[in-house]
Length: 287
Image (cartoon, rainbow, N blue to C red; front, side):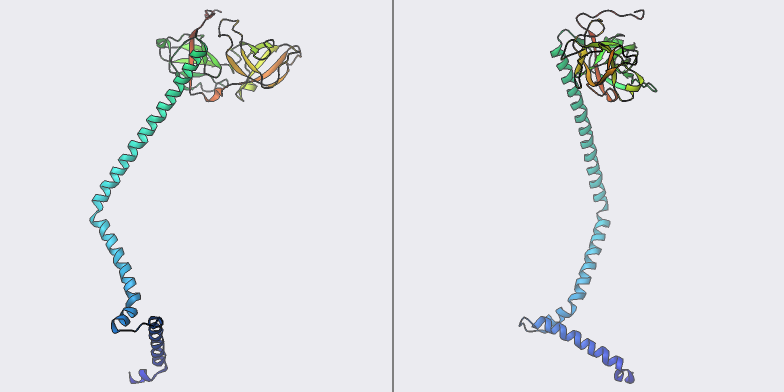
């Protein structure tokens, strides 16, 4: 032991300790303050007190969690319940907003066409599987006053016609189908007539076609095509769609055009059925 106090290692440790003490004494006296015994001890022990205070706070935090676990759990459950109720209210608000919007469209159609007798707004239940012409079913049927061969519309345009009707569900054939023909005229010229009749190529893009137009027609891009009402199957002057391109049919004997419906028929959520209107002609399966 005596040899240790005389060794270079001890001398180095003593010198290093003296250096540290000198640094701390210098630090607390640099501002001109005297160093009492208490302040000196506080200075020496300050780093250790900081560490112990941090440990103490962490321990208190852990103990708080342990002792108040039930209270925190109950508070968490209460907040979850509040969030669930708020989400439910938001869902109900969105549903009410959609319903109000549909009723607004309903009123708009009725205001513009006083002779129409309309069904209640119909929800689209879904599109018919594997039908490229986007036939769909709606949640209204004969119990709601709907019959086959009644025009199906939105506030924006003609969508199609009912073809199969059960008590509470109806199937709608759209204007994208080649099995539905609608007499149409250009709203701006009132002279360029044709037949709206879909085909598979245009239906893939959500469009339909105008056929049997005059070769020298005056149709141009953006022109609006509307119903003529001559067949008695559809009301007069109801919007169908706008001209996207104009050309001639394959044999060059008549004009044709690609028509973009005024609404995306591939993404319908609700429609309205016109159950009766002025000039309507009764249509049967034999027609």
